[in-house]
Image (tube, rainbow, N blue to C red; front, side, top):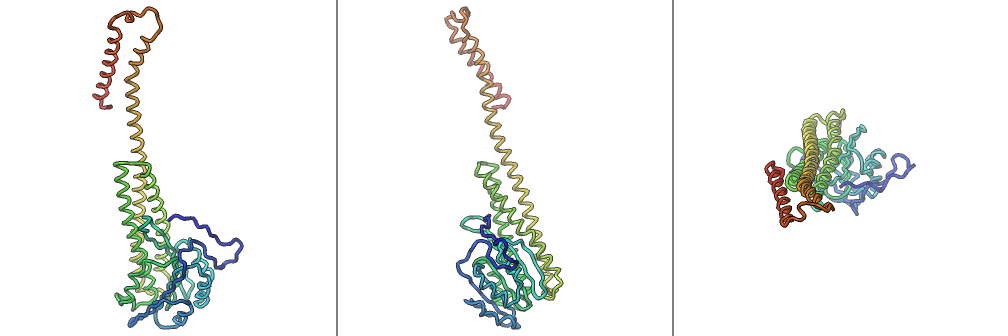
Length: 353
């Protein structure tokens, strides 16, 4: 999940130079096109990006989804045909972008972070998703095949709801809503992890527990960095003075905004809980250390008078009265045992043992 980007933009290259920055997550580029209106829906996968260029001037709504960003030629062709700014295409290829929105008049540009849980590694992974929103088209770019948009595709295919009756702004709203809904799924799974770790901290804290706490803490920081700017994106999208965003859609955007605020509040709560767990863990380790030191101190205290007695009778004086006594050795042993037992009983009575 937390990987440093090894490939960087070449120093000195001019602005708008298209260089893929990030991990290559797809071997091939997959291009899918969904073209629809209120009466019909046509979905297909194309091999060449030029096969969808004619849809730009149609009266239907067209959603072009490109999975895989390493084929620069494809990005250049679609940017040239749809007259997309090179700086925005550069942002598409730089997969470490902060979520943002930009208004270029004839189209809007959005960058979001799509989070999903890797079931094999049991960790949250992130992927950048970019959108170009025009009057009759939406172009989305993903790092690899596989996303959280299948419910949206099903609604378009079967004409559920009002999505086929609305324009591109409503389509983008549904895509954003799908991303935000998946944040809730990740939040629920994270909550389950926190509950398990919290129980482990209280019952049997180990060094592995500390590692789990730090891992979940990093996940919360990562999610916060993804969700916090998303709130600004949705707020700007809602208030955008653009003919591309209809007033009927702003109501739905406001609802997504509320969901985003709710997620942020939950993340902040989880961060406080995790900080509390870390304090509890450190206190637990400190208490265990104190228990060990208490036992060692009691043992040392019991042996202090015994060591004193042994030291007295270990002195090399010629005349010690008890040395010539027949029962002297046994008497010293009995006295030492009595002192040790009496001190042990005293400590137990004080509940120090």
